[in-house]
Amino acid sequence: MNWLHTIIVLATVFLAVLWEAAFPGLRHLLGAQVDLLPPLVVYAGLRANLLTVGLVAFCGGLWTDSLSANPLGISVLPLFAAGLSVYGCRELVMREQTFAQIVLGLAASAIVPLLTLMLLLTTGQTPLLGWGTLWQLMVMSVGGAIATPIFFAIFEWIQRALIHARPHESSFRSDREIRRGR
Image 1 (spheres, rainbow, N blue to C red):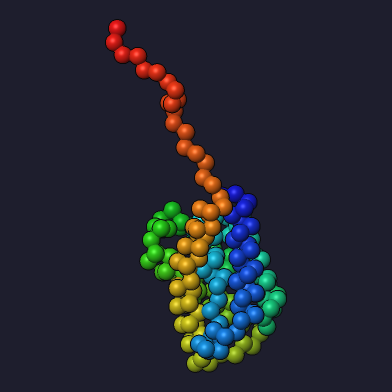
Image 2 (cartoon, rainbow, N blue to C red):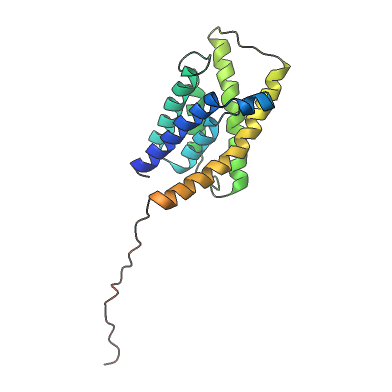
C-alpha cells in the first residue's frame, strides 16, 4: 500500500464522521445512529498496513469524540482493538468474500460500542442505558454489516481509478530470438 491509499482512507473517515454529525435524518428515522467507523476499521485491517489501522482508529476516534458527548479519546481504544484483531487474522479471512466482510462488519459494529460503553462505565461516566440501548446496538450492528461491503466496493473502484498497479514484467524479453536446429 502506498501513501495515497492511506490518505484516501483517512479522508473517507473524516467525511464519514462529518456525515454522521451533519445529517441526522437516518438517526431520526431509525432511532439510532449508524456508526461508519467500525466498517472502515475492518477495511483498514484487511487491506492496509498497521500504521493505517492505527491512524484510522486514532483520528476517527478523536474526530468522533470531538463531535459527541463522549470524553475525548474514549473511542480510540475500542476502534484500535477491533482493527488490530482483524489485522491479526487477515491471512485467515477470505477478504474478497462478501459474506466474510458482512460478518466482520457486524462483529466490529457490535463490539466497538460495547467496549466504548465498558470504558465509559469504568471511568465513572453515567451513560443512558435502557431497553433502547439494545435497539441502538442492533441498528448499529446491522448498519455496519451493510456498510462494510459497500466500503470495500467503493475503495476497490477508487484504487482501480487512481492507483495503478505495477506492470508485470516477464523474465523473457519480447525481442528475444529463439534459434532452433543445429
